Image (tube, rainbow, N blue to C red; front, top):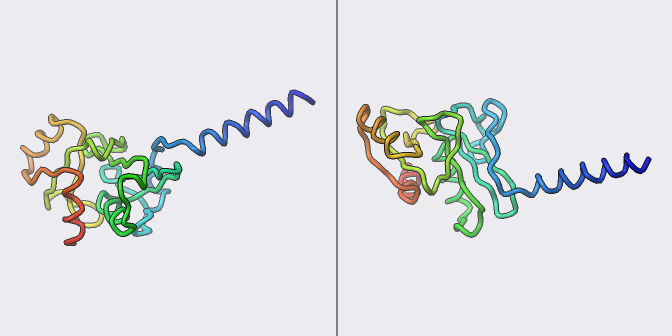
Length: 149
């Protein structure tokens, strides 16, 4: 009987520790809903997420929905723990949005029409840029573009 209570205690502690984590979680494409536009997150090249300062995870179907959410809520960097975007060159894998390199090109259509993508490395960026062209951006540049949409 004592072993049963110990196992229950361990399970509860594990749940509490993992539920308060400020680490990003994998996006469940086709299951998670975009916090901003309420569409299903479908495209592994464009999904993104925000981890709040309390560890709550918000999923988005595109970079522009992530930016729109942050902007509409008037969030400052102190209001969230981290932001993550899908690596266009490695679909389904998320990267730190503040370190990503962004490319805007209207030939590469994103779910909500900003047509901006993120990659992790200069090599990945150069490969896509050399094929399609476009404009290189930083995370901060995206806010003005989203406001103009």
